Image (cartoon, rainbow, N blue to C red; front, side, top):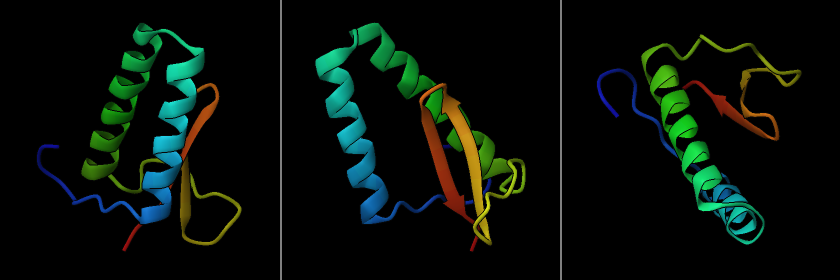
Length: 78
């Protein structure tokens, strides 16, 4: 993931990511799945290098980034 902050995934976040990929594998092409993976990796690199880059959501201390049109990632800085 390069330099910057370390990203730790919660069990819930990993379950959600897994469910998203399972859905995509059934309903979308391999190309679309690869594009999402690339975009998630790019977004994680941005967060690791500048955690304050994305705006705060309505919940305190939670930031929100739209990865793709129907995929949003929420994260918290510690």
